Structures are given as C-alpha cells and as structure tokens.
Amino acid sequence: MSNRKTDKAYYALRWEVLKRDNFTCQYCGQHAPNVKLEVDHIIPFREGGDDSMGNLLTSCYSCNRGKNASSIISRPFIKPFIKENSLSSRILKIITSDGNKKTKELAEILVTNEATIRTITNRLKNRGFIQRDGEYWSKTKQ
Image (tube, rainbow, N blue to C red):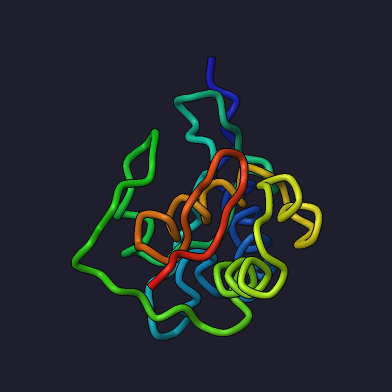
C-alpha cells in the first residue's frame, strides 16, 4: 500500500520545502520567478524514499528532468551558472578553500543530510566541477 500524503497535505509539505530552500533550485541556484520550481525526491519514492522534509528539496524543472528516477545523468550540453549561496556553490567553496572532503564531512559542515550532498556532488562531478578520489571530493584541475 502507498504511504503517500493526501493532496492537501502534499501541497502544504511542498510549500514548506520551497520556503525552506528559499524558492531556489538546490542544484543550480536559479530561483523563482525566473524558473519553474518543483519538489524533488532525493531518494525516489519507488526505491523506498518517502515524502518527508529530509527527502525533499527544491529543484528547477531543467535540473529535475535532467536525471532519471535512480541516478543523476550527465548533461554535457549544459554548463550551469552556479548562483552564490546555493548549496552547490557552498560545496564548491568548501572544497576549494578547505581541500578534500568526504560526503559526511560536507553534510556536517552544511547541516544537511548525506543524501542531499551525494545528489549535488554527483551533479557537480557530472558537470566537471569536482572529482572523486576514493572517499574524498576535490576540485577538478582545469
């Protein structure tokens, strides 16, 4: 049986996620009203994810459609402009200034869950901003 929330409860939760994320895509940093925003599941519902605040984040239409249900895929034709103070830009700043970091360390510094950090770091990796060396993330040498 489904454990999804009712329509009214879902829209209330969606609004809370959008407010929490300051109406800004947590992948690329674009914000309303410039883009259409959606609420994205970090762990897809069909893979056991739920509709809890910890498993949801704000995503623009393009970023949300640029991945499939189980993994983030590379879209090399898009060179994103990462806006200041988005989670993506804060991850890049930490890795650039503090050196190599593990996913768990980034989650602790940014006070968020590891699933969110994994999603965003994989997207940054697929777009060529960072690389993974064992357990550590580091800035791509350009």
